[in-house]
Length: 260
Image (tube, rainbow, N blue to C red):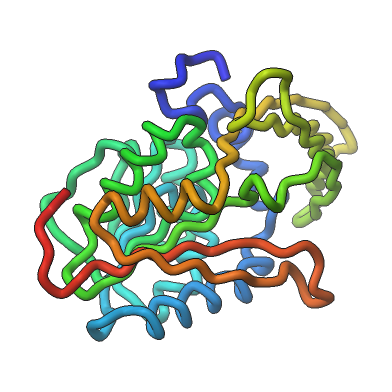
């Protein structure tokens, strides 16, 4: 990733910087309706208080928030200014804050705290524990935090994925290639190739290497419990036809608890 493990791993990825304007074609906002509804239902069913406010740590361009803001007053945090700019355009009514999910402190609590795919960039147990601690500090007593890694050790398989979309004369296609480096049991690589076609037909190809954490379910549960939450694991199926299984982890903050 071009930075030490102690620095947030997304910093040098072009997708989140000079190529950020292409992100809405990588995964269009329309694709997030089902995912956001799952998060909403899990927050409502697991919170011990009526959920009204939500903190999204690693909100990116705000595609989940585009739906969640219908149910919650949202505060949206991301490390990258270019992603926050996309987020502001899509969700101007929300509060936007630049910060690192491992260390940001907003001085308040929220009924719901969400860490979805950005939590994948926590590629050490220490970094993941810090992100979970941030979630705990910002979760109100009786509230819930939700964590959704793309994979846990038990569900990961090397492979490829393709996708993309087009809009207003521009088009993007991508190839994702996932693999595990030698001698790294808790990390995997996602090499991403982006083929970008401009309105005039010009095509360019770019590459990013995403270095991502990969931890067993037991580690997720242990770290969520260690932060002070009551952990809950929710298995689910990807996509309308089932597909490979995934995991959502929730942490419910007890009604009476001290900050970790």
